Amino acid sequence: MKLCILGGGGFRTPYVYSALLRDAGSPRITEVALYDVDEDRLRTMTAILRQFAAGFADAPELVPTTSLSAAVQGSDFVFAAIRVGGLEGRRCDEHVALDLDVIGQETTGPGGLAYALRTVPVMMEVARLVRELAPRAYLMNFTNPAGIITEAMQSVLGDRVLGICDTPSGLGRRVAATLGLDHTRVQLDYVGLNHLGWMRRVLHDGEDVLPALLADEDRLGALEEGQVFGTEWIRTLGVIPNEYLYYYYFNRDAVRRINGSGPTRGDFLARTQTDFFTAARTAGDGAAELWRETVDARTASYMVEARGGEQGAPTTRRERNPDPAHQGYAGVALGVMAAITRNERATMILNVRNGTTIAGLPPDAVVEVPTLVDAGGVHPLATAAPEMDQLGLMQQVKAVERHTIAAALTGSRDEALLAFALHPLVDSVSVARELLTGYLERIPEVASVLTG
Image (cartoon, rainbow, N blue to C red; front, side):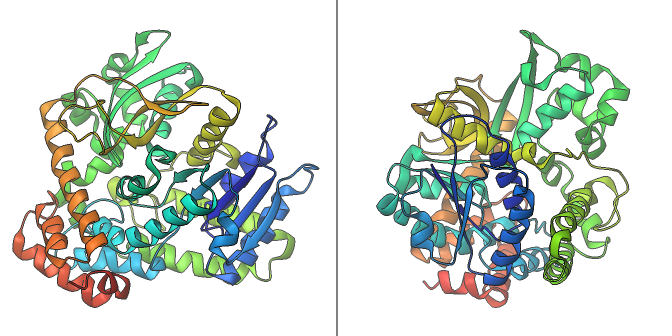
């Protein structure tokens, strides 16, 4: 079988390839097409993957290419993780918003909307090409903002495109570890949108163990979410929020901390990734280890402002799994492929079409919920209704997402203004106008989309 990785020169690729190397099932992926527009990065990452493959006699064949059509042609699965506008675009997403004292995170708030505006048209072209050249393929989308991109692409590919995010599964794994439980025997009751959701129950052998965790100050405080939100607020909510809800629940604190902490996440990644690729060109057999070291530094500084640190100078240690084959989205992606091709039925938290899962949201809205995956495809599971505050926030953000998709597809600046102005983290028409002007001036890819 053939897997196509869009963004094959990116940092996520070794995670996915490592998972494939250790997959002993049948049928399995035997060919991996690596597509990227940056030949230098593609060459470097291919060399790193070959170092990972040393010792594996049946390693999937690597086929690097800068031809999108060649990469997609005949694929059984497509894994999409591209960054339109590169890291300079991400830096602008952040700084345009932060200059106006608004969150600029790449998936949450106006920064995410700017990212989506320039990314949706590119991914729609990808969807049309997949429909033409690999009509039976499933597309696993990790391109951010994952919920918006997945929903847009479903208008072309339907349920054959699904969004992957490692945050909910990572939360479930950490909760299980904190309680000393086997995470493979834990069922998660989770509801929300991408980067906006809540863990409501954690079932182990049919018993909800979440109340015991909420009542244990030491264990709850040791959990990353306990450090981000504070144990008191989590107990007040009675659920564990997705870590990205920090930007909603502590909006002013987050803006103040980020503006006062020196380099933004985009600044940090732009510097460290440039340094990495420069060093990797001459690292020879040490390139794979250099990648591991760089990834460790990236992971340690993830959402560091929520824990009182600075990019490159975290105050607490973030969880790290030493085996890249089981890192978040790679494990989810492998699980999806195994479930579909081998009927190894599995339940995962995915971004899928709502249908009747959550009343109060449109049937074609993409939601993030527990989903059964088998040879018949993806099937979101029935779930209890969200609380009013949860549903209200989901509805408002979903409306914003839909205005963003409309703006990206039609080029309408009015639709884009609606998206910015209605976002709960902007909350001002005047600021929304300034945001729109700033993104048009600073990011050429946004200006090229919003022409009307």
